[in-house]
Amino acid sequence: MKLIKTASGKIILSILVFICLAVIGVRLRRNFSQVLSVQAFVNGEIIFVRASIPGELELKSEKIKLSNQLEKGTQIGTIKSTVENPRVSVLKIDKQQLETRLQDVQQQISGVKQQIGNRDELMRLFKQQTDIQKNLQRNYARQQIKQYEGQQIQSQAAEKLALTEAQRYNLLSKEGVVSLSKVESEIATAQQASGKVKETQSQIEQAKLVLEATKVGLQLEDTRTLSYPEMRVYQLEVELTDLKQQGKNLEKQLQSIRSQLVSTSKELQAQAFVPVLAPTKGVIWSIDTQPQEKVEANKSIIQLLNCNNLWVEAFVNETDANKLVIGQAAEIILSGLSNTQWFGQVETIRAGTGRIEVGKYIVEPPPEIARRQLPVRVATVRIKVDWPKTPRFGDFCLAGRSVNVRFIKSKSSPF
Image (tube, one colour):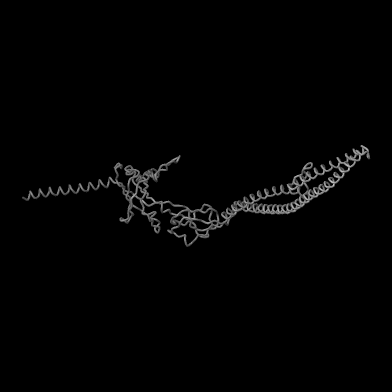
C-alpha cells in the first residue's frame, strides 16, 4: 500500500508539474507573441512664436507663465524697434514724399475749384447780358414791325390819293381839259403807290419772321454771328467742362495718394512697433526670451504646445516591428497610473532610429560599429490616440510623459 501511495503520489505530482509548466508555457508564449514598447512618451506639436522685427521686447507678464493657456490672437507682448532699420528709413522718405504730393494735389484741386467758381460767376454775368441782348433784339424787331406798319398806313393813304387823282384826271381827259400824257403820269403815280403798299406789307412779314427767329436765338439775314456775351458763354462752357474733368482726375489721384499714405503709415508703424500675437490656441511650453530683452528678428520668444495635436511615440525592437501593421490597435497606459489608459492606432513605422541618417550622401559608420558594440536596434512607431475631448492644460496636456504601449493583435497582424 505504501508503494501504491508513493506511486500515485508521484503520478499526481507529475500531473501538477505538467499543468504548471503548460500554464507557464502558454503565458510565456502569449508574452513573447505580443509586442510591447521598449520606451514610449506623449509627443505634441510645438509652435515657435518668433520676433518679426529686431528691437526691445515687452511681455505681458500676467499672461506669460508656463502652462498658461493662450487663445488664438492673444497679445503676448510688443516689440519696439530700437535698432537702425533700413526699411524704416525708406518708408519715412516715402511717407514724406507722399505727404508732399498730397499737399500739391490738394492745392491743385483748390485752384481748380476756384477757377470753376470764377467761370460760373462769369457765366452768370454773360448769360444775363445775353438775355438782355435777346430782349433788346426782340424789342428792336417789334419796333421795326411798328415802323413798317406806320409806313404801310402812309403808303395806303398815298395809294388811295393817287388812285383818286388818276380817276379824276381820266375824267378830265375825256372832257378834253387835260392831256392824255398827264393822265398816264397820274396812273403811273398810282401804280407806284400800290407797289409801295405791297413792299411795306412784305417788310412787315419779314420783320415778323425776324422776331420769331430772334425769340429762339436764330438769325435769318446773312450768316449767324454771335455777340460777345454769347461767344463768352460758349467759351466758358468748354472751359468749365475741361476744369470739371481735371477736378475729377485730381480727386482720383488724391484718393490713390491717400491710400498709399495709409498703407505706408501702417507698414512704418509695423516696422517700428509691432504686437506679438499667439498664432493659435495652445499652452506655454517654454519662455525663450525675458521681458525688456533686446531680440533679433526671427528669435524665438515663446513656444506653444498645441494640445489639439498630440500623439504617442513608441520605440520597439526592430524584430518586433516586423509584426506590426499600419492601422493596428494599441493600448496606451500612463506610467505609474494603470487606471489611466487610452487606445489608438499605428500611423507610421520607421526603422533605423538613432543609428542611420537616411538621405545623407556620404555616410559614416554608426557609433556602435565604431565601438564594436551591438546595442538594441529599435524602430519608432507613431500612434494616433483617441484622446478625451477636454485636454488637461494644467500639466501641459501630458506632453513628455512616459507611457507603456501594448499593441493589440488584429486579424491583419502577422503574429
